[in-house]
Length: 95
Image (tube, rainbow, N blue to C red; front, top):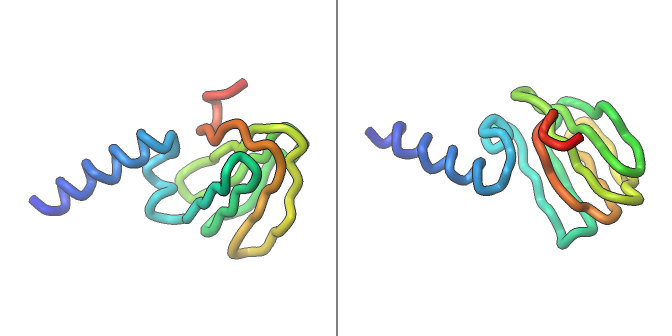
């Protein structure tokens, strides 16, 4: 019974944050205002432009959308993105 309740809570948190459920268990994302995103537990990056950075996770991809986005840190463990962050969206939700 407790596992089912925990899954429901995790799903609600993911829906409220607008991120896939898989991201909550496998990575950590910290957003500082609208200026910086720090992400741990990624499996790499895809598109990297001043307007969008695609960050891959085991369960999918999350896009950081904004203006003047720059990677300020990139390692196997973490990514830091700085710029005017406008949204964090699942792949395919923002075109």
